Image 1 (cartoon, rainbow, N blue to C red):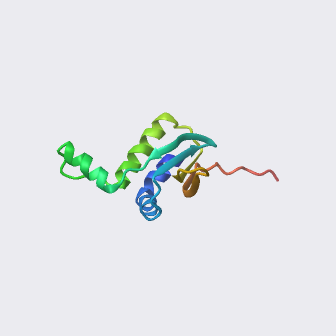
Image 2: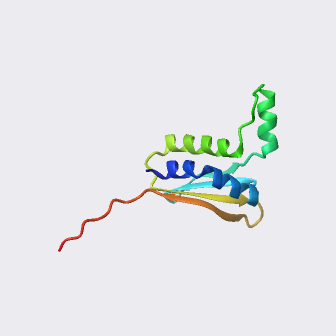
Image 3: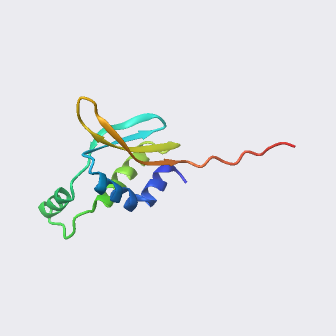
Amino acid sequence: MNPWRKLVEVAPAIAAKMRAMRPPKLRVVADGRVLYWALAVPEEEDLEAHAAFWGRQKAPALEAWLVERLNFLEEAFPEAKEVELWGLWAGDSPRLEFVALARKKRPQEVGHA
């Protein structure tokens, strides 16, 4: 299973952690390469307002937004072996806090006797 799928599987737990941390931005790193320097994390109220504007019955939750972003990135970077998510707060010394990490499992190496 690739790391994007692993993160999608635990999206509810990641979203809960993000709700508690309240990072205004999310940094996404794959295989040591920054894919998003500062992806704006929407507030739940903003998701609801956006849904209401477009006449949707139910607003997408933070989990759905996160899954949508992860799916988009998986399409662009399907070969990623390791994906990190970091909460980001701007400032003269930006603050980064770990959110999640997923790695592609490596096949077991066969030893020789």
